Image (cartoon, rainbow, N blue to C red):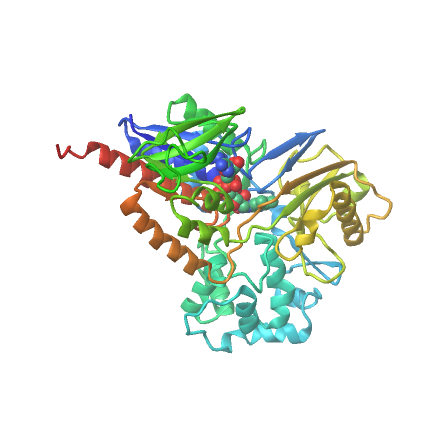
Length: 494
Ligand SMILES: Cc1cc2nc3c(=O)[nH]c(=O)nc-3n(C[C@H](O)[C@H](O)[C@H](O)COP(=O)(O)OP(=O)(O)OC[C@H]3O[C@@H](n4cnc5c(N)ncnc54)[C@H](O)[C@@H]3O)c2cc1C
């Protein structure tokens, strides 16, 4: 029987396996998902302790991708939209919390921008459109259209909130393609916003991206990967092997490391992908006709070092900063002081080190015991690499100090703490990312001639959002399965 191996059981790997099983349509194809960790879900991990439910990674996903509904249905789950409180968003400037007001007079007095800064936005429709195709950073774009003040005070904190990234290094067309499209389509972001608001029933969202409701599940976001893997395995769609790390990946017999080389794979076979996998202290070799790489970019770079060194070099250069997620639970005093809202983005330089805070208690039910509030903060990212060196105690202390300043929590100590570290948290879509992806696609096409059947999925390919990673996995899994089956069904030349 032919075999398709999917490396990584995050949402992109599981979506790949699900799509491959759909594409198989009763044909003979073994679909095997190999996951290094003890659980499926990748970054989507939910911690349940002492009555708190803390998302270690993504808070939820925006329900504007039909694929997500299909996966939810396959998992047998009921999706849960965030509370209306999620519509209230805050921004911290000069160490002070300010609500982002939708109405222009209120926005004017919110203190987020000076009157000059507001005036600069008001003149945005009269600014010239960019015509040259050169890549532009998110900050450059925002400064050109909305003014440097709005770029510093609104857009840079947003890039920190979404990518833990630096707006001056993040590519507009790669990270926020919607903004670039709106400028091209409407000639102005302000005009685009007004026009989209007037188009009744259209869920086009703001300039930063497509809208959609923040969605999760009663038991947390990890329910989707867990139940999806469970129900698909029960149906015989695919198999997942946990605690199974792919150590090396080669195509055929590696000429640089032939089978008798001490560093080679003694069981490598010609004409197929050869994987060395380790599980519970033992290493063995397996083969596959096709492979979907659904790992983080840095892991994909390591695995491709031998079969595709040019692609490996490109992937290695995608920055993946460290992010720590620090969850703090507080009692009734803090509950009374925390605004009922989504959370706050933070402008750098105002004496606050956290990248942002989310008030989970107000987003979904039963995230913390009655009379308490769960606040989840991100620390580190592209602009604060030093944070990776902090101990858990230091991370808790700095987060507590920042929240105390923001919410006047004087004397209120946390009654619950949790620290989760992601050493390679989020791929940075820096300037030139799309050109890099073009080079990778070209190199993949030529690899297909000599080593056919390799597919890339994951959040560095077509968007970092959970649903985008799922979409990339879906496309890769479907294509990989169709290709293997097409080859298997081709009449023999002999
Ligand atoms: C702190 C944080 C907050 C986020 N918040 C949001 C949010 O609110 N909304 C949103 O839409 N997105 C959010 N994201 C982004 C989103 O979570 C990710 O982009 C998405 O989950 C990535 O899925 P993936 O399957 O591509 O990769 P991953 O989830 O990283 O999965 C990769 C898998 O590959 C496995 N693996 C690695 N190496 C090997 C190997 N050698 N052999 C076998 N398996 C291997 C890993 O163990 C892992 O399970 C957030 C990310 C982080 C880190």
